[in-house]
Amino acid sequence: MSFISTTARKKMLTIAGLIWFGYIVAHMLSLLNFHFGATAFNGFYDWFNNSPVYWLVLLTLIVALSFHVFIAVLRQLNNNTALGVSKYRRHYPKAIPRFIAWSGASMLLAFIIFHVVQMQLLEGSDRHQQMLDIFSQPSMLIVYALGLMVLGAHLHHALSNALQTLGVSNKTYHLLVVLIVLLIVVGLISIPVSIVYA
Ligand code: HEM
Image 1 (cartoon, rainbow, N blue to C red):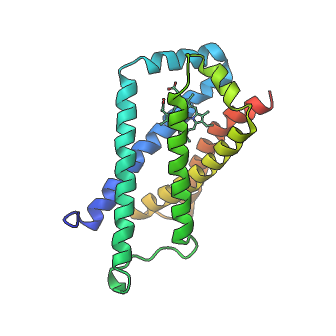
Image 2: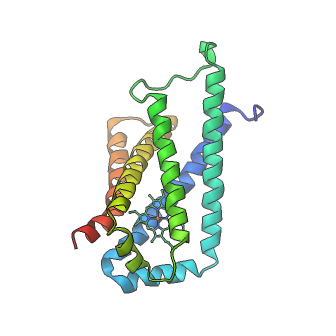
Image 3: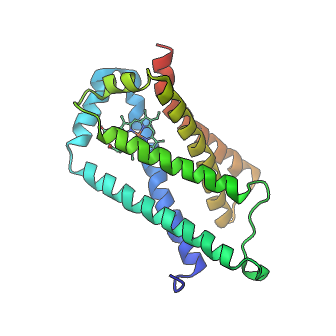
């Protein structure tokens, strides 16, 4: 893969990440239907799960995620190889040690795999009732709280990085990133929270 330039790899990483970002925003918005009751929530998923778009979306997400992880690991390995040849080594912000960043990314990957498998194993079509069942288990609340925390951290890091690449990294844009990440996380977390406090 050394024939692919560092810039091209970064572009591929960003495009695959942006596909997921688009899906997460759409997913959060469709999940907000939960607050309008069982008919609205189940109606959406009955339509979506039976439309040909469903498998296309899932396949695109799996390919994009595999690609995103592959390129990220490759970039890190190359960076390690360049260790000692300081002019080739990319320097990361000291505030986020590599170990922490990789632990967070691994936790997010584990959460996504867990969540997709859990959703695939659901039986029947009453998604509203299934959400109530899932989030009445304390262990699930912990898993989802951790998953959403690492998602928030990863999105914040990734979006800030993308802006920096585009050459826009002033305070206003940083605030915008924080706001977008907060809206996504709060939107998603509103489903389990509304169940716990119902
Ligand atoms: C509290 C937060 C979340 C809730 C309540 C939730 C709920 C759901 C529901 C109801 C489905 C549809 C299952 C179906 O197809 O019938 C689904 C699918 C999916 N979710 Fe989430 N989700 C949450 C967070 C996330 C996050 C953070 C991600 C990714 C980072 C994610 C990724 C996916 C994917 C890829 C699918 C498609 C898998 C499938 O339909 O089988 N979800 N989720």
